Image 1 (cartoon, one colour):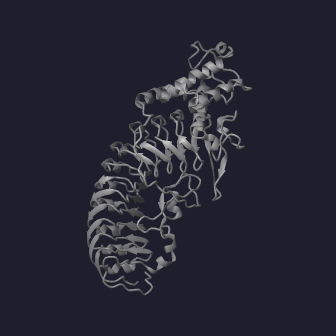
Image 2 (image 1 turned 120 degrees about the vertical axis):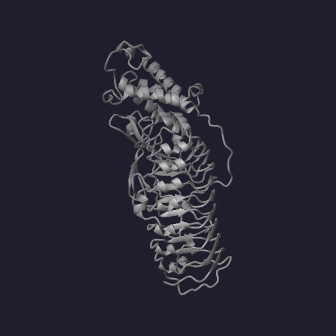
Image 3 (image 1 turned 135 degrees about the vertical axis):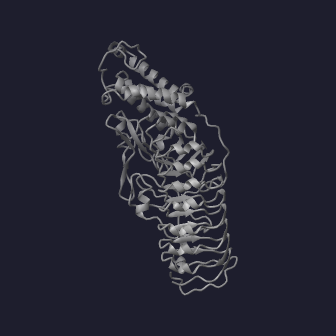
Length: 524
């Protein structure tokens, strides 16, 4: 460990122990007490991230936090508003449990049908004795003038009942009314939209839902996909699977704004950094085959619609860095048991972490940093054994750390800075041997730091400053050959600085001021 030959004697209040390597990187640090967050802006998603004196997360680590992975990074600063906004009523809260059951029944009939006719279809392909408002009208019904519009109105109404937006249809300026007017005009297209073929109806519903999203999220001002933008523009008469361009990233990669499966169902929406303003409409719940919704770095407002709970295959939901509010974890979401990535940091969400979080057993990334989440960490969080990154810094979490955190053996990155957590670090926590980034900073944690910290071979960052830790500094820190950042300042630590610090070959930043320590920084 290179110390530039500098020796420090008695360590007292206000004395900073820092290695000479800090000098070359100090310009990158604007506030040691609250280092900048960043997010990798690549082809998909990344978390809010502190700008360390040197990045401690290599490409292999980063790739585990991306879908898909990217080998290129771009830093972007995201600042949270200083003023905490008041909680707003959630106008989209409806009883989705009953609607889910009904939706599942309807889906079961649809997905058993053969591959739907490619859009658009000139005429229905089969006859039925069902009445005109059913999903299988007779050929005569569809040949009658006005039947197309009547059928579409019927379908739009049924969608609105399902997601709770019937009243919006009475407002001519609402996104729902604008989308209805637009899709009804497609009855005059050549060829016209097909409102009669059973396999086409669910595609028409998705077409309508995408149109509502366009109007609700300020589509005319989007960076990509706006009307008149050229290739991939939304609201064109083409099959909606052709909406949305292929977007090139600065790192040389690319991603699709909208992707469908072979049957024409919407699978993925990636609208990151797209200048979107407005609320996510409840009609998102019509996209019942969707596996990924990504819209970080926008200006979306309002709550997450409860109808999100209808999208049972959903694996990734990422609305990080917006201006959204309302309850983050709603009961209607508990059934999303395919969820892998749930990212909602840098918003204004409220509420508590429910015990039902333990039902998300496939969860790998849970990020809700810089919000207003209260309550405690439920013991059921330990059921998320595949969790790789758990970021909840800058919230209002209280209580103690559950011992069940020790069950999360895939955990690589945990950050709980700036909360109100008390008690001690459970000994079980140190059984997560893949840990690389551990941040306890600025809570009210007490007790000693266990010698077991030396059993974390991959540990690169350990921030435990601004707490009430006592006792001596574990000599086992010397076992950590990969440790780069160690913050222990502003605690109640005492005794001598371990001579084993000389074995920390990778250390770049070391801070221990405002303790009762004695001794010198050992040379290598």
